[in-house]
Amino acid sequence: MVPVSEQAANPMSDRTPEQTRSWREAIRSCFHPRVISMLFLGFSAGLPLLLIFSSLSIWLREAEVSRSTVTYFSWAALAYSFKFVWAPLVDRLPLPFLTRWLGRRRGWLLLAQVAIVGALLFMAGNDPLHNLALTAIGAVMLGFSSATQDIVIDAYRIEAADNNLQAMMSSSYMAGYRIGMLVAGAGTLKLASAFAGADGGYSYMAWSMAYVCMAGMMGVGILTTLLIPEPKTNQDGSLSGVYNTQDYLRFLGLFVLTAGVFVGNFVLFSSVVAATKSAIDAGPLSGFLLEAVRIVISVVIALLAARLLIGMQLVSRHMVRETYIAPFTDFFTRYGKTALFILALVGSYRIADIVMGAVANVFYSDMGYTKDQIANITKTFGLLMTIAGGFVGGVLAIRFGVLRMLWVGALLAAITNLLFALIAGMAPQSMLLAVVIAADNLSGGVATAAFVAYLSGLTNRAFTAMQYAVFSSLMTLLPKILAGYSGTMVDALGYQTFFIVTAVMGLPVLALVSWIIRLERRQSE
Image (cartoon, rainbow, N blue to C red; front, side, top):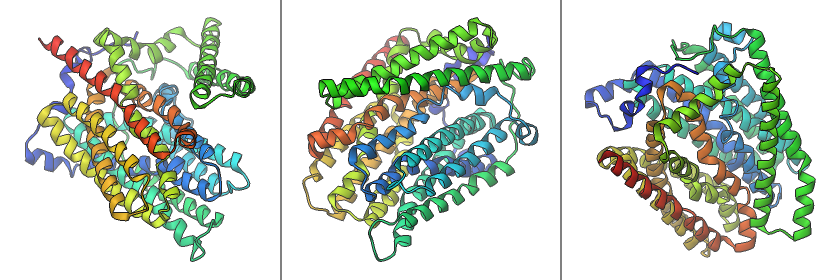
């Protein structure tokens, strides 16, 4: 088993979100070279996100793709939810040439960024009006490569600076992330509108050129990767120097074969699920349950195949145990029975805003708002409100405590969804939409600030990269699966009822936070 350092054995003492520093130290840390570099890496990480389903959803809608199909494309971002599966490979596996040239972190980072550029160019080269399947493949490629970039940047951020600089590193990263989202959201819509000219109708070339420009913007991240230094790491339990090249190749082979078994069974059962849906005339709920069963069966078969391959000594049991099992064992050992409630909270906290967000751009378009209005109000102005909400949430979390603000953030996220139900039956009004967007994004910023602080406090520094990947994957898994059916739900319920349903989805989250607060108080007493 991976050895745990003395600090890691008592990770609760290292919960930096509750610590404070002087104003002079805080201001000085803003200009630290590592903090500035995280601003540009954050930009590189935030850029691909909206290009997968937000800006892409408007492109698809203009290409006359149905609402239900558009929201299915949000599943392309599920790679963010499953990134913990290959995070250990990124953490431990050396890359030929790149690792020797740039180091372990920067080598993987450059590979991921080049893959993002390739995926964007691939999407730009295919018109969804005629090649919808190829557009979907490009979206999946983009989701996988950008999720891989997130894994590396998270690990780099943790390893590149001491604990006293981590809060500012995270703040800089999130600021850059929001700027990247702004460029990918409002910037892409502006470019597509400008390239389309006065015609205003659907133009494949306009969208293609906009995505090519976004691929060029990834040069910011690539240049940063080439300029920043490789962090000097001293990780407990590192596999470096313990296993040889053959061991790494076998480990990679195990991962590829297991993933292949999962994909093969997932595709194999597609016809069975489709036939069952048709036979029972499945609605949105029953259709979701059938798809969930399909995923679970595929995962179970893949795990059984992995166990069989390990039993055949394809890869070292000790290597698998160090890589995948130790981080989970540590978490459940530290938190005991409370761990189940924590995981339930992590997996459901963002359910209200993610399910609503998957259909938001389609809602704006169906309501009659123009691309310029969507870009100016929901993207530019909205992201500025989110950044402001993040700062407000950080200050309030320090003042009143993370868990209290976690509860307040969940409440606000549910309430603001009701505002969208209010405007769903009204004629397009820019000022009214701006007020709703301000309330929604401010509350979202508060909730995100408290949630990130909470997740940071949960991790053990001996397993930070893996555990954080698990938490960040889990927090979007269920919401994104449900989001794939949001278009179908809108078709069945209408926009007003749909937004009310998403608000109700946030009520169990409030109960979970309240219960965890009660457990924390009992433990402290």
